[in-house]
Image 1: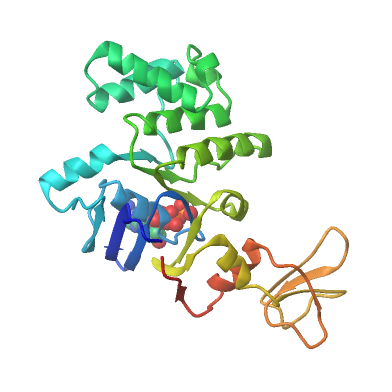
Image 2: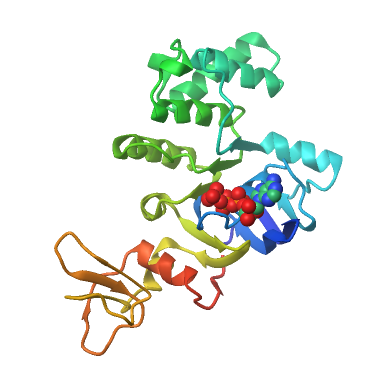
Length: 289
Ligand SMILES: Nc1ncnc2c1ncn2[C@@H]1O[C@H](COP(=O)(O)OP(=O)(O)OP(=O)(O)O)[C@@H](O)[C@H]1O
């Protein structure tokens, strides 16, 4: 890709006592949606918090559109350019959707009342919540609440949107609806989407970063991650002891991932298969951005 990266990070390191939550993390983010996959404790939330300038890294640096949050001015510029949806958004459940987003807009210093209300209506429309903007948040479904939080993150039309596991707890229909909204939000801006859902990444993302133990294990396209499992997924009547992972499918046969025996009946790999292999001690491969 030839465009300038929105985010350029190099050597980000952050330790909590003996744990390296981030261990020499380097990557670039470009326009579009990038998925951030990793098991529990991989460092995804920590990385988003660092990028959101909520906590500083111990070492390393990053820029957002060339602005360096290591300086006071740079930090202000970076904060102006980003929207952040944290893992547990702090809702005021008695507020209406409109009042909550308006409140966040006030915190973001949108001081002109008429302009602010226009902006609140715009972001609620963007997440398709115009019809329920007068409803109290406690009366909304989980999926709608997540969209309220996303609307708040979209205030001021940020160049960079950081979303921390926004689809957790949503049913398939709500997830699909949320995917549509994220895909729209990814038009003309850069989105980093932390998720456990490999399907979200396969369906939505232009690029994917896989983290484990605070390190980047893979960076590339979803197709490249899937390709890591090409020729390494096979079917068998019993669980193959050679497999790194294997489970009985609904049809009764075992689906195995790893190094197949000769003459194995190979299956079409999925992104999840590639992800499992990357996590399971595969050599680190960082494709060029
Ligand atoms: N404030 C903190 N104090 C101490 N340790 C922390 C703190 N925040 C994170 N950690 C540790 O840093 C590591 C990375 O945590 P982090 O929450 O970033 O992972 P994650 O990939 O977001 O996990 P999950 O998918 O469960 O949300 C974990 O070992 C975690 O216990």
